[in-house]
Length: 296
Image (cartoon, rainbow, N blue to C red):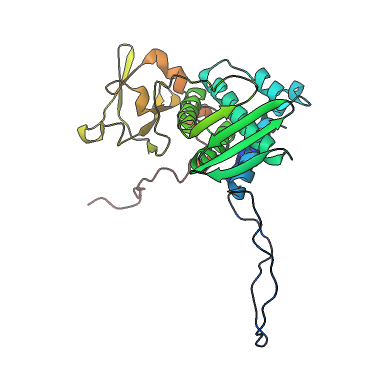
């Protein structure tokens, strides 16, 4: 079961791909003047594909929790939420993400639940098991929920540190909350968290050629004047420092500097000997200098 998070991440990441269903196309073997009778359009679930993807994300996230803690099996989703670890801001944000997704799943799949599209929002509502569940969220917010689950579950097989993943999840969560206009469940309102790094989740520029100098108790990265704006150049420095590979986001630097004491937070996971996973082979491009060219 240790492969569940990786498999779940792959499934969520691919959930937007269309399934291989039969194609239906018209063919006219001869002319027909009279058309077939067709009933009026039926009321359908708005944004059905996106709602289904969010339900899948919820199920996979729950499966991940149950894999980590078998005691979660058989509990209600609310009890699962309450029992989730909250050792860090990242843990708490993941718990809140599950809390939002469970409303989508319970309302969308329950016979008493309703989902309507109105005013640019998807409105989930249902009095289910004696509790009023309500969520008004934009389609973009629903897409972000699916995306953060894909990122979070996929991160277990990536070399990024827990601190890096936490910073990314917090940024996703802040953007998700901004897309929610109404929320109601067994608890109070959604929790808010400090996001000191404000990592750029849209783009990361990977640099493995950074120049690093250790002076006293700090590491200094040489960043050209043209690339010092972290908003325009959200760089991740892949740096081997004291024989250990680190992945340090530029947002964690102060004027290009980070304290030696803070380096363990950004130590790459599962990279003994500084070796990245094979999936990173094509992430960095370098010219290969021929070794058999005669000198002139």
